[in-house]
Length: 197
Length: 49
Image (tube, rainbow over all chains, first blue to last red; front, side, top):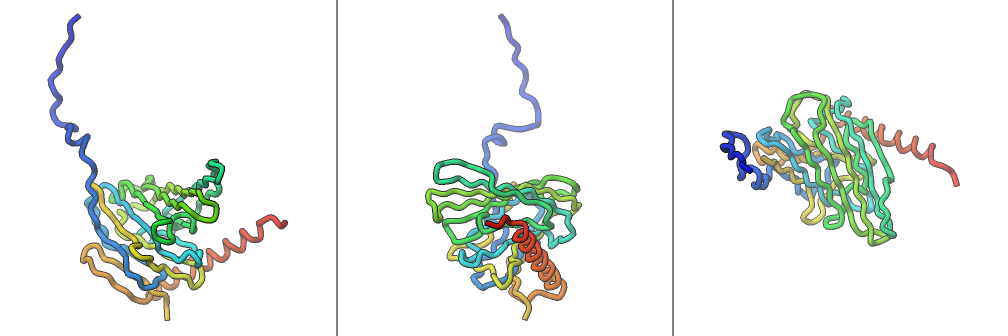
């Protein structure tokens, strides 16, 4: 039984393309320990494929402030968020405990990974952030914490969002909107924005 | 005194710490009012024991 040997195709993906991990470049960070109501990362380069935004230890656990994330300071409801929160109980069950939508910013509760360093963190992945095509999904946020009153304990908030704005994302605001609470970085905490090729 | 805003500019790698300007402060007040209204709505809808 014979077989044919086809020539290697020209162009397209190479083995190197398939095995090379994406390179992360730190574009900017906000680690100032001064209290602030809003922290902004601005003038973000559009030369990357994705953004990864790592948020950790921004708010004192005792304040329980509501924390929002807004792109391009755009408050005109051009971004829609659909959120699910998963909680693992002490018996190992995982259940959805909350969903949310219809905000002009992404609403992160204290379960979503904004609080003390080491226990809570959140990673936002923004796909295709530099595109100017409207009506597209642009990414998700995952926040996790372990520990708490009923250890072992695990929660995850998963937000999927899309935008109808025809603008590249070049600015990200993280802010509190609950009374006098402020964003204060814990040791080694802060906001870190990475670009990925 | 208006709330503090910390801005990190990725292009210049410089950080600015300043008070919110008028338009930022106006949006902040809108966000706070919307959040407080939502909280009041949720409390009104919460089942009583």
